[in-house]
Image 1 (cartoon, rainbow, N blue to C red):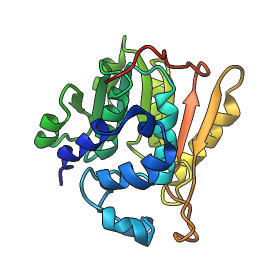
Image 2: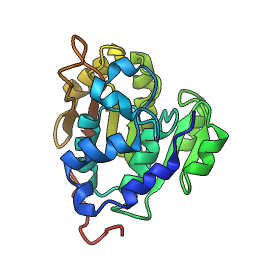
Image 3: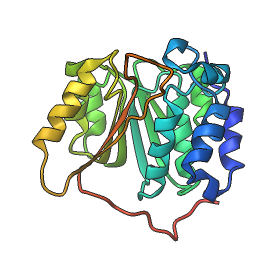
Image 4: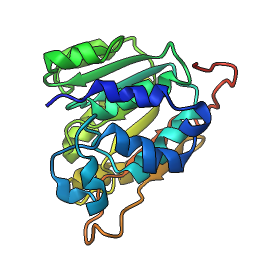
Length: 238
């Protein structure tokens, strides 16, 4: 199952003003790019027809607000732990490229499908276990503006991933902070918020759909280790 990379052309065909419009991203661009085809019960009925394409495994109403937030930040480097089919990773990468064409991105997962390597273009794709020594060695001396943690969703797993990258990132993002399916992520997110003080900030994108009842799902938690850094308005993609 490989995302249809040709759909990413929709990102490059959208104006910058549209790319910073939450409603356009939520209702038009993200569904048109295509949502994940697994566990369709997690999506409202009216979104299931968009399954396929880029295989984005996020709620559009959360992902849209998150992307618009990222567009306001100065992001030149991006690391994602747990890219699976690559839908969210590739979408985020190409979206950010519209605001900074020279961004460098790295995706990490236990296995990288050979075809995905050809779709990621300039991105670096690493087949490794983020809990083992070779990932620790990779992180040594590195620095990333944005780090997405979306790998092992157990409490122990997300904690171990954060411990590996906490000193090399500026903006950290945790996936599934409100998901009833993987409560360990929410537990760690709550602990992180309770332990941090000073100039650190937390933002949550946790909108739900009324038609998906009795179980909150997904949720993106953003931890800004050094507070807000506004994007240089002169550094714009074309």
